Amino acid sequence: MSDSLQGQVIVVTGASSGMGKAIALESARRGAKVVLIARRQVELEKVASQVRDLGGEVVVLPADLSKADAISTLFQRLVQAVKQVDVLVNAAGFGKFGEFVHSDMQTVTDMFQVNVLGLMYFTRLVGRLMIDQKHGQIVNFGSIAGKVPTAKSAAYSASKAAVIQFSNVLRLELKPFGVHVMTVNPGPVYTNFFNIADASGKYLQNVEAFVLDPDDVAWEVVHFFGTNKRELNLPLSLSLACKFYNLFPTIGDYISLKVASLK
Image (cartoon, rainbow, N blue to C red; front, side):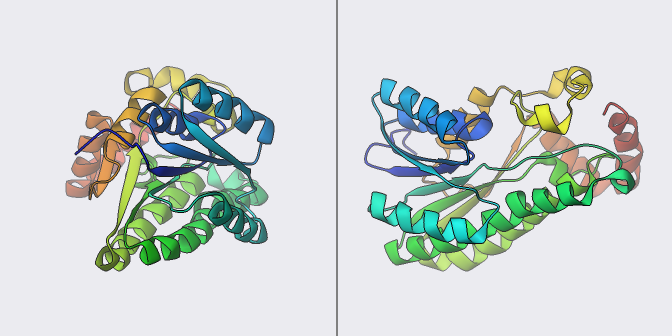
């Protein structure tokens, strides 16, 4: 396993901030050509400038991944801009915490449109390209929340569980073509995700012991580019919690209810 990405093209959605930005910069440090995708062009240009400062090549493709027609146009622009796609990182997404029965259903719909359907639409197109190439890797961001239930995150957790299962099936379908699929399931990460998910800031304070640094997560993710790694669960403590929950769901529910009150 080599950490050099020289000559490779890495496509990252949600690249204007958070995990997408961190992965794009880590990829550039290792010599990759990076394609940055997100809605906000101004923010993408700032990340592109950082990529260039690292000596990397960069392509900026602003697009709204909640709209199917925009995704079709995005893909056409992508194949015009690059000759190949070695790795697709689907890092775009958002969440909002709260009691589900009091949720705004438009927010829930938007969450699934971005976190699940947009990811699936774009992956479908890039997956076809990778089949033709006879190589590639798709990295989908799930979440520990998609594996271990906690209160006040029903819609977000459901969207991430959908991403995880989608990835599991896609892995089987693409394996005969030399295309690998890895799911990344982090716990809480210090990013602007929580500006929307938990505007009060109390949740991050309460779970500080488990919060990850985005640059550390990016290093771990990029380290497994070009491999057949199936799943990456971070941090180790929450990875073990996933295993515990599967073995002892009743006890897991009890513990989860206690932890969920931290939201």
